[in-house]
Image 1 (cartoon, helix red, strand yellow):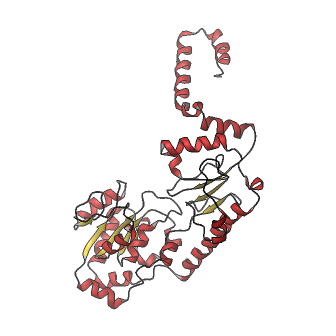
Image 2 (image 1 turned 90 degrees about the vertical axis):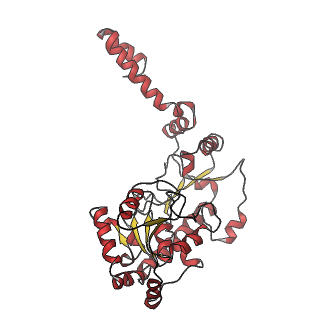
Image 3 (image 1 turned 180 degrees about the vertical axis):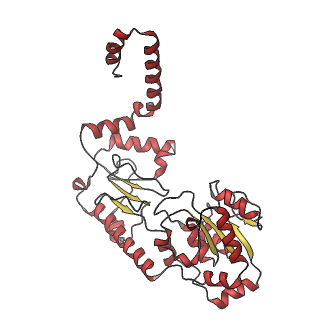
Length: 341
């Protein structure tokens, strides 16, 4: 769902699942059959509705299907049709989170003999699973979530307060494996933020532009190293040098410039959303119109779209049969008849 901070605007919106004027779609329309069928139904029945794509994972939208899109990809630009998702750090700034730690507080944490490193995930994903195993060869890494759990207190993403719980559990460690499920420019999620809020040193893999939003002095950025072996050598160095760890863990999460950039992005998001819902709905449509856009939609929503991979295989089989069994002189005419030339 999109986040609307304009209360006057949200009060004017009414949920209507049958005949909506605005349809907000997530990436599950490509991965869940029920959501896919619902989107196809809307595309057939509600051609004049405004379709808005709001992704939670790192995929780009098909702007033949959607009028507008909120995306992670910071390089994707298309007039007023696309805006960029504000990284989760903006959400954390507004919540009741752990503030920056002083050096004295960090030293007391060291004196309490914290654990070495945590790993809190619900699902399998590479390369973070590989890194977990490699780092575990140096020292025990505690997996606190459901995936590869080796502790007795897993945190589930289904829990209502899972984010606050994950911060609390991570706070008992020196390091956190904070790795995204994908490497994608602009895709900076809560993983590194919660690790910083827990006053650990995050070991981060994911967004190649993460330092646009996060202070590079506060974490280990795998993008800066040629291999995971080199990353682990850096972890060892920090683990064995208390002053080095204290220098990193007491760094601010963001520089002033980074925080100002987040605030600008949030204002731009508000303007983007307000523009969609406040203009005349007849003028809000942005999807292309015409024979080829209609052909694309018909293929996406109809049986032909569903069977497209099978059509390709069938054509290849027929071509192969033509080469083997049909005389050369007859082959060209038959191919034209079958619309295969």
